[in-house]
Structure formats: C-alpha cells, structure tokens
Length: 212
Image (cartoon, rainbow, N blue to C red; front, side, top):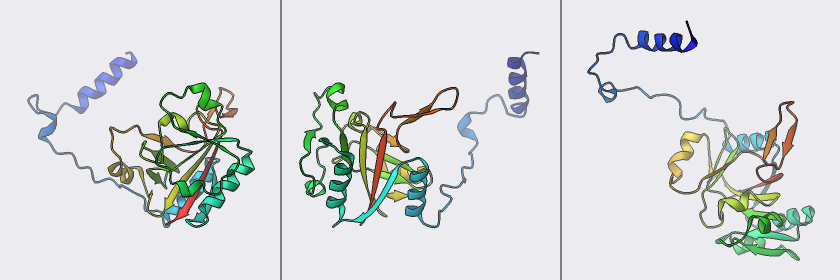
C-alpha cells in the first residue's frame, strides 16, 4: 500500500458516518479555543520576546522620545534616515546632521539600500509572538522602507498599541492594507544552521516602547 492509499483510506474511514447529502455548513463547528494565554504583563512579555529575537529594546516616555531617537541614530553613525509621510516631526527634533530622505514612490531599491536608517511607528504589537505589524498608515510608510535600510527604529506606544495575541491583533488590522509582520531583525539559516542576518531586511531592529 502506498502512502497515498493509506492517507485516502484514513479520510474515507473518518467520513464513513457522514451522510452523502450533508453540506459543510449543515453542522456548526465549535470554535471555543483560547484567543490569548493572558500574559501577566503584555508589555513585559513583548519586550522579552523582542529581545529573544535579538531586537534591541528601549523604553522612554513621550518627552524623552526625540532625544532617544537622536542618540540611537548618532550611535549608529547614520548620515541619512528615511522619514515616512505622517511621522510626527517632534520625534526627529533632536536629530542633527542627518539627511532626511522622504518615502518617495519613485525611490529605487538601490537608493533606499544606500540609506543608513529608517524610523517608523507601527499599527499594533503582539506580545506573545514579539511581533510588530506595520500597515502603511501615516508614520509607517511603504513596506519597502522597512526592508531596505540596514537599521530600523520602530516606535511602539505602550500599552495602547500592545495586544496579547495574534487573534486580538487581527480585528485591529484592515486585511486589504499592505501588512508587514516583523519579529526581530531579518535572519535566516543555511543547512548547517549558521545564522545570517540582514538577508531579507534590516540587520538591526531597535524598538522604542513609549509610555502613553
């Protein structure tokens, strides 16, 4: 007996007691599974999981955000930064000597790859998976600006933008928008399990948790 025959045999046995004229919608399916595992502190869980993914986590309040972003870009030695449309101007108030590159639709991949950093906000952050979701709203920009520059600074307002789980995040998102799900810096492994970072996106992800 082939593997195919074995699998189809299991399917036939599982359906043996199902009437032939029964439609899929005729029998309601109970979907009472958990939507969250209710972490004790969603913000702390988010920070821990981001760190597990090798993202660098910073904390500040709204008043300290501009100075922190300025320090992060200076420490990186950034000479240019992509600024998406709608990013609050106050966030970059302390950034000096860094060329600001607009998120222009005609910018080429080569031009974006030459930019040192990008600063964005996010739509929502998922604590259980350590995931940031960008949806192209004001302050987040086009998907490619979070993929081409080698250094991404992402600002998350806490606790307002943090949810426990993916099922809680989905109702906040519009499925027709360009959703980008980010769990740590870009990384992959070869057959020897040697980790390589920066292949499909930024090599360095710095997440700023800003207290509302």
